[in-house]
Image: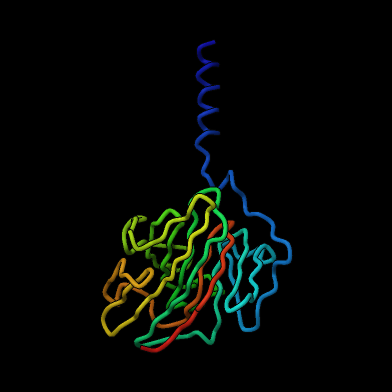
Length: 215
């Protein structure tokens, strides 16, 4: 009896500690799969593009999705000194903390050897800077870090923040609402290539003012 009780307890513990992602599968999205002219997407899984709805709306774009996704235009290829910026309005709170933000230095974005750097925030007021090389990712800024410059979501799940990445001759600066949250040597990042947007799992966002400009 005692053995059976222990086994039952272990099984229940296993269920209780399942990763949050397994309890929150990618949601289906009506009307997904079509993109504004010039835009491309890639989901992390490389499938289910129809679960991404990305449409022009007002002076920007609105995205509702299931799987983690990058979106980009070949025309937004940059090198040298430049700035990438966009404002992100989280319109509803996700079931658990999910990230979104900017990518830069993208290359081979539809291939197994894709590469880019990315700057993300979450509705809980945290940020992260990472690099992707193929299927491998590595944090550059350390673990998820809270910063006062980031507006956290309110009781309705809404928040708005403007993200910018400034690529200079020797340094890359990462800013939220005009305030630097991280900076590093340019050789730590992918900076020569396509800039774009990254949105993680089951989010609903409005994106405005996306621009890639020389500086």
